[in-house]
Length: 323
Image (tube, rainbow, N blue to C red; front, side, top):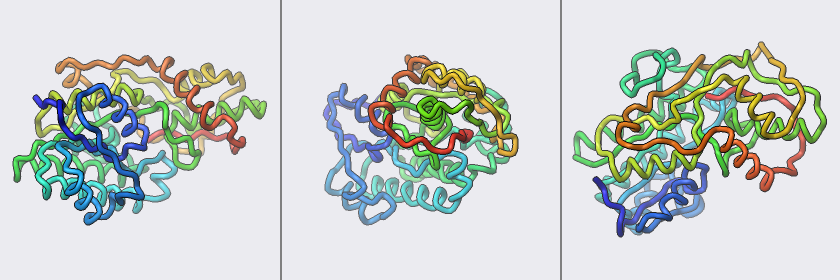
């Protein structure tokens, strides 16, 4: 439905894990990829973004930029997660419309859904129940992004769409223990426990919550697929269609890393949402399916970690849960 040939595509957030994967994926298309560093364009400043879009003249925008983090970061900095993400979204949407950019893909998050949504979660579950309290601020910002896309479509006829990925991982992930999601935190801490010869690592909570994971390169492939083939007001779930418990994920990660110690639980810490498996029926019916199995993707991500963070100083060995 949308031919990328000869188009100028701005990937906002190109240095992040997902944005960089989108840039890699677009390299196989006959289009020009536009990028801008944070020093060149502050996405929270409307004037900066409008000036960049006016000068660069993109035909389409992939909005992959966001302030993201794990359960600890979200719970500690609720104002930052709500305020900064709202600023990014309104700045980019406003600049796109002001400069007559008629194609935009907004990247959301599976945390938009109610905490106890029926599983697997379908797109129409949005706003049908209370959010997970530990990350509701981030979720509200992402819901606002979906609604911005729908509003510009309804009022101005803009061809703006939204995709909601599940938990993502891969090369370029954030391995900072104070702000990362569960999978990169598990990789780093299992590695550091192995290096330090620590007998145990500790999981927050019971380890029973179940999560779905998708490699960033699979996500990027799905996003480019949607950019080319989808036009509609409804957001589209992007996931693997399979989940596993946090304990099973920890065991799989320890196996990939080669850590042979025990996994213990800190039951004073929260579990978060009990389960979050998204229905990907709509995307699969369009003809897209993921290609990278979780163990394969974990192994690749661990190799990337070793090449970039393998010499990191061992820190406190505690693993936080995901959003």
